Length: 251
Ligand code: B16
Ligand code: MG
Image 1 (tube, rainbow, N blue to C red):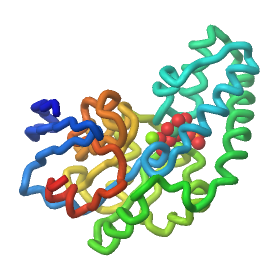
Image 2 (image 1 turned 60 degrees about the horizontal axis):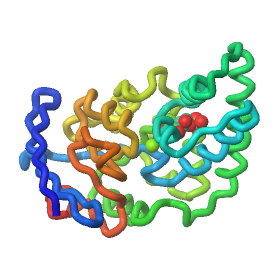
Image 3 (image 1 turned 90 degrees about the vertical axis):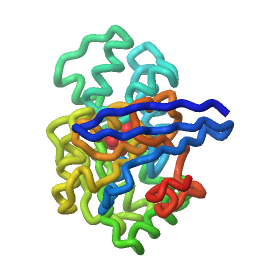
């Protein structure tokens, strides 16, 4: 087991984060004891559901039709990035220049291909442990919000039959600034009537973690710590995780 100590200064708050790597890539963090947590805001893609695989297939199809390809390492850079910003990154990668109207057409094609996948999604595609975790939050009267860059967030939540858990949904149709700008989470906290310091953000993308930190939220990374070095805590996912454990740092 490797032991790391991270000292983080965020929004004038000091958090000493002790991170333990184990062979199951599990980390423990110690957050200040006096914080009263009132809400959780969830990113969607990569946190609640693995739509990244569908984005990847659709974006690769676009790249292939334009005569080039990219791999999963490059794809990592697209997580949490808006549709048009993703397209610009991909075009740069392929060395392709398009007019604005052509970009809009290609982005729309990609979205059509992507929607073919998401409109087939089944209820059981919510990632392991997510639904029990949402239920526990609801029972504990912790407010629940969504903070996603996606303009497809609502149909995805509907397909998974979990939309009813979310008191506030802030998605790509309601924001003007993309992550790492904190706007998406700030609007979420405002909608829920809580302060950022009372709210935990769950994010799978480094840009999303930076957005949460920039807004003064508690940032829980979901996934691989190597991609999320700035998060206060990193969890591999929600399987076998309870809010009680996370809140009391007993994980
Ligand atoms: P759409 P998140 C993000 O969702 C995805 O991570 C990113 O890959 C995607 O480009 C973006 O949504 C926009 O999605 O094309 O559906 O509007 O991770 O912020 O929930
Ligand atoms: Mg995400």
